Length: 306
Image: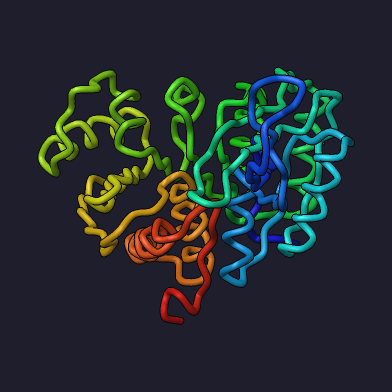
């Protein structure tokens, strides 16, 4: 049974690398010649992939179609040693296909495959039953605002967590914040935190964040971690302890997936050592290693010095 369960939006990230060798004889535009393609796991699946790369184990639950992209997604989960349980939908598997020119590594075009779907009461029951089967100590909601979220689902998971003494961790979009009062921890980035408190002009300083962060935790009754890119991260515990954690990143290639790595590393660390401040420091270090990498990325224990 997995001590960690990851729930929510999953996505296949597809990269098509191309070059242009001639013009299209049918129309005056370049002919793109696809040289090779690769696929990676993103969103909640990237959280699970990071847990696996740290030699941890998680149960991933997400919406998926039985289309070609869905089959590829499930294959990647197996390759990354992720225990994945799909909630089957008739909508296409959410996929982002990026066309990247090979010489200069520039993205020419992105094609999105996605349609809005709705969670049903039956889907909620399936997820709660999976929680009961796995008896996790840690539950991660990885929110990319793609319609899987419902108040009913979050309330059901909260009830399970309260009854079974499990901790809920959330990487939530601002418009879904209202569902997550009284969870264990929420981890927005600085921009999302500003949106959550309704002050997008908030200066990115320890003093300003501390003032608003203390009000935030008192209202929502949880631990708060705010990632701040080159300024590192801030932890404000539910009892009001404040920690400003600097980053060691010197050069940033890509911050897109750093949040997934950060949250995965926090939960993995807690599952091993059970100290929140140490876990956030571990997550902070893991995220600054990942931003040195290009594309969807994970981090290993060896890279972290273990």
